[in-house]
Length: 82
Image 1 (cartoon, rainbow, N blue to C red):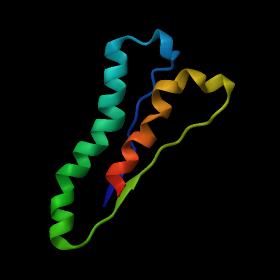
Image 2: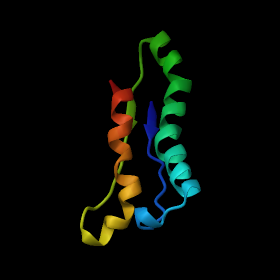
Image 3: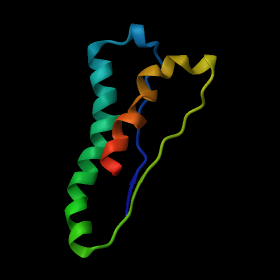
């Protein structure tokens, strides 16, 4: 079983993020689960057994708009679950 549960949030407004901060968020929150899944998926297919669980937790509200760089990533990772 793979449980993709890691993620980072930098807490800055999107307009204030540096290119490096944007790239780090994408590397950890999007590419991390993709690489982990790609690593273990072949053995899961070969054994015809396994589960992949991807989680995210966040609260939407005006006080959380600074997380905008984080919120789009669950939708980006959705296609690899198919």
